[in-house]
Length: 375
Image 1 (tube, rainbow, N blue to C red):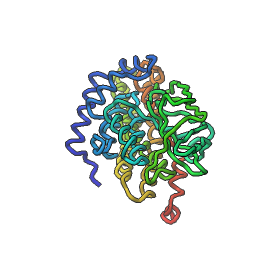
Image 2 (cartoon, one colour; image 1 turned 135 degrees about the vertical axis):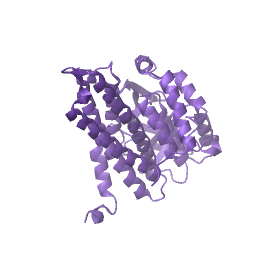
Image 3 (tube, helix red, strand yellow; image 1 turned 180 degrees about the horizontal axis):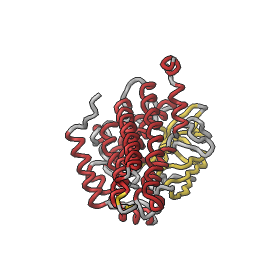
Image 4 (cartoon, one colour; image 1 turned 60 degrees about the vertical axis):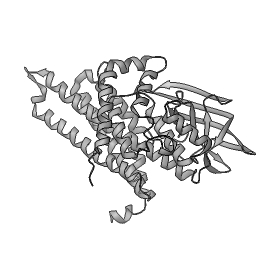
């Protein structure tokens, strides 16, 4: 399979990388992390001008209709640049509207506004008791005519406090349905906090909170899983960018740190270790690219298989490369003054978002054909 990016994709990636290298250095990033908002309106506006917010939006709603592979190109650069803006949350929210919405009326208006960078979205996947089970939902929806209200809570909603609208899965008469809740909806409470990677998350609480149901043809449990798989594809792509940057930073550090009068990069044992780090990254890259391609497959099991395989390999690579990078940096590898520590923290969060290695190994093994292939 040819994973060569098109000229347009490469130009898009190059433009984004130049912007980040010039305007989003490590110190700038750290200042944003420490700010009260935790994100930068200035950089979000720049992302909009670069076309990032319009990329995942369908052409019918004024976007570019970018595929998962197009998004992979973007997410790699964001991972390389340690970007903390709420782009992943917004992109996954756009995909949720695309898959579960009608593409008309209020759904179309939200997509148009999201593509223009006017609003941000976030999907509230998980609940406090459910760990990685997307379908273990205690949040319930009640209908009164054409109106709905939600009661329940959602935990670790990525950039939930920065979102203008939330996509919320809930039980409606025992079945899973998806709802749109505006940030200022009545009886909706938001508790925001910073995660270990410097990003922001929130716990959302609803108590008879008004909501609008997404009434697309396939707005149920299968769609919720489809949306989560999209989020995983983007996370895997971001991880590849972070792994590349972490490998590069580690190599450069070993060229400057000296022991016994020579750079430690000249020690053969450490060279072997860095080669293993590169091998882990390249194996993870192959599966991440495959998952981006297979995301568009009409065969849901093929999509699930590729996505879970990528998430497993990304998680393994994130742990190995991160741990080796910290060791090779010595004591500096765990300090906030060194970017390597922050890439490792981000990779650790990616590994546990939407299912860790064990969860996706179990999901992969449960798919049809696994036992037959093993035999």
